[in-house]
Length: 344
Image 1 (cartoon, rainbow, N blue to C red):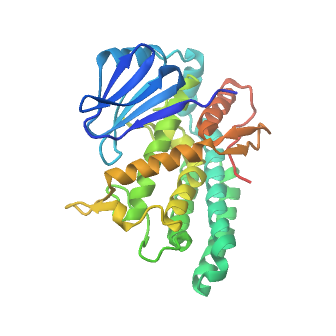
Image 2 (image 1 turned 180 degrees about the horizontal axis):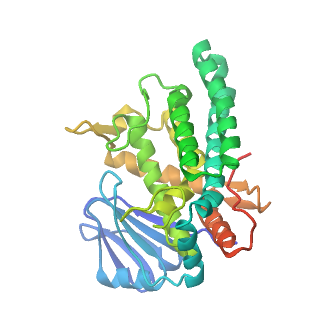
Image 3 (image 1 turned 90 degrees about the vertical axis):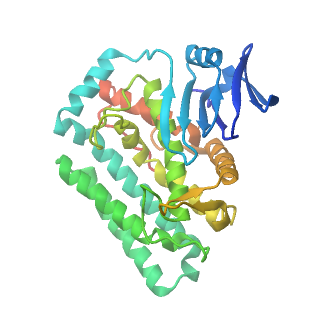
């Protein structure tokens, strides 16, 4: 099993990262704030006005450490990485399947079914933890959604048409986010539905930020096994869009991102004061709040779960790498079908 390497998240405004021997040094206003051995890092994520020295970027690329740059609001800007040593035959099979709707469905239906089942699990947990305190209408809505999600997952698992499969995924997402607000126990933070570009309330701002972090991890995991993160099966391919990373994220987001968002809000570790409203109506995480969320994200990734297919315990932070490896084995023909990650 691959060792879980750390991601160095840098959110300090004006931070300067440089190389000192085999260490990454973070400085602010000329003062050293952090020193991390390079061999412990899997990636570096820089948010906002953060700079890296050319020597450090070269050393990181040579060591196989990816540098990702994000705007202050978490929007992905760019990645810097060294040569990709992926298997050309694996990528050829990936592209071949991507051009074949039937080949896409064979992989994507497992991802959609897994996503629906994991979203269902989040709603079931809300019913189990808070069902007794919910109004009857809210409890009935959650119960009905749980039953419908199971039916959607069953249909998706045996779907043979790619467009219909995308319809199942859209139906599950609409149903899930239609009742997601019932799982939020803090009355001053409301949720009326998913809004992305831009996020229009604190819940959507938090979800979008966590999804950005998860896509970054999925993209790095796919590149690590030799797959092209831009050539997906469920999401349509577009220039500059990491379609396969978005595919891989679908079965992971409910338990890695959504549950973390609910925990942070319901435990009042994140509140309305941690967000700021922009002139265009967008709601974004404040700088200090991003640091708190990043800390919680890193702690969440250290938790372990028994993988339902491998039957061994795996840190949550390694799940993108595990699923990327299983996807690569499926494309090579080592597995009959792609096994999605479904929480029990």
